[in-house]
Structure formats: structure tokens, C-alpha cells
Image (cartoon, rainbow over all chains, first blue to last red; front, side, top):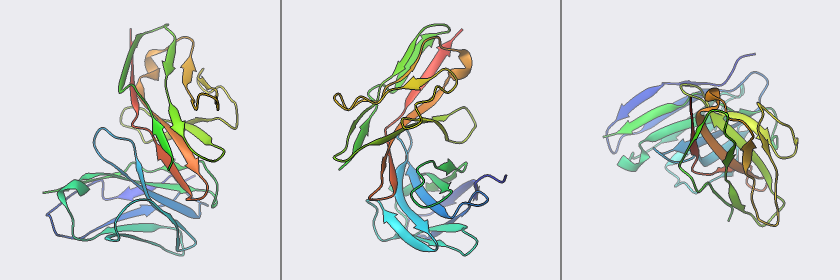
Length: 113
Length: 109
């Protein structure tokens, strides 16, 4: 069984730039969620994708956007990066929509300077 | 809006001592609660969920709706229990998990 994989593992960007983070969901999982984890805090829900459509969104501005592809892999895009966007970004997949157990990737550490 | 609170950032105990990691929640619906754990250099993973009422690695957690709590307990801590523990609440309307801020458990030899 292949677990959730994320790329890249680390990334440094400049304020105002755009970034794309990638996630391959666990084999057989059709639902992907993204979380932002700031230092010293718990993960915060950004949004979820199911069958290539956004299926729920947390309290994040529109410059945070996503995609899910037919193979259920996913991207998180952040435009106009701000210093406060520096965080660990976690991808989690679930077997089906509404399945509450989430399987997490190892995360992408984004630093905005 | 839902909220999950873990009042202790750090909990330090000796091996063999009992452990209780506290979690309180606020949620208007019927809550579905979880404990996730992150061991050093590993990814976040599910430890247990209240629906299953299982004991995993000696840990149990009981949902107390009156006190809106879901504390994690283990009668005898082991050094390998040292990790970050996150309590989480599932909101089925938003298809989202709301996490607490986490508690770092350190079990000393």
C-alpha cells in the first residue's frame, strides 16, 4: 500500500511570489484535504477535494486555491505569498468522502522571506 | 463554530506513571472525536477515535458530552509514548477536522 507523499519537502520563497505544493494520495483514496500547521500550533483545515471539486473550505483567503486530478493527486497553490504563510503544509487523504479517518503525508515546509 | 482546546503544551511524566492528556471541545452538533499522534520524525497518524471505543497501545479516551471533554489516558506510561498528541473534532458539514494545539508528552526513564 502506497502512503501519502508530498513534494517538495522544503521550499523557500520570497514575499509576493506564488507557490505550488503537490500531493499524491494513498492508493484507492479519492478525497484529499490540505492543512496548514504554523509553528507550535495544530493543523488548520484549508480545504478538501473530492472527485476534482472543492468539497469544503476553512477560513483561508481566495489566494489559497487547489486542484485535484483524475488520479486523485492534488495541488495547493498560494498566490501573493505573505510572511505569515510560512508553515508546514500537510496533505491528508481519505478512502471516501465523509470517511473521517485521514492519512497524512510528511508535509512540505514553506518558508517565506 | 467548533473549537478544540488542549490546555497543556507539555506534559512530563516518569515511566510507569499514569498519563492523562486533556482535550475539551465546543461543537453544536453530535461530536466525532479523535486523537492523532506524531512520533519523532514520523507523520501524523490516527491513534484512536471515540466511535470505536478501542484501546490502542494501552491508551483509552472516553467522550464526556456533559463536560465536553475527550481526555486521553494511559495507566502506565512507556518511554516510547513520547510524542506530540493532537485532539481533533470532525465537522461533517464542512468535511473538516478541527485540531487542538497539541500536547507534547515526554516520558522520562
